[in-house]
Length: 128
Image 1 (cartoon, rainbow, N blue to C red):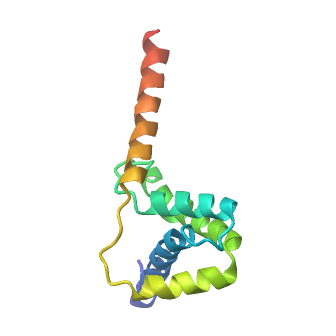
Image 2: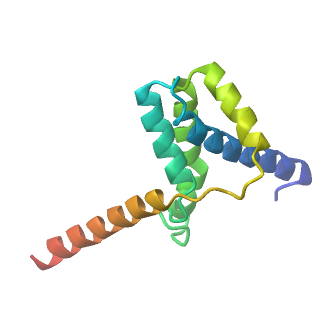
């Protein structure tokens, strides 16, 4: 059972993760960010804010793998690549933003395309 102190800690961690993902979206558009850091930051932010997961949540255990491992590891990698000064400014800006949670249509399209490709490959393998 999760106690109230542990639950508060998890909520704070999730809020920081969301803030950092939003800050990475801002960092990938900053001209001071190197191209490779922009690529990783954009990919992580697009995936984090995509309404569709690569592994759907209804799949037992694996469904939450992206929420618990893929996104945090991607954020950690991107944070190492983005210059500290840029990341600091982007974090402050992300905290100030009062807009609703960003959604990535591009991320949803990529995830759907991956699923369609996997289903097509499986169908081809089974019926060819």
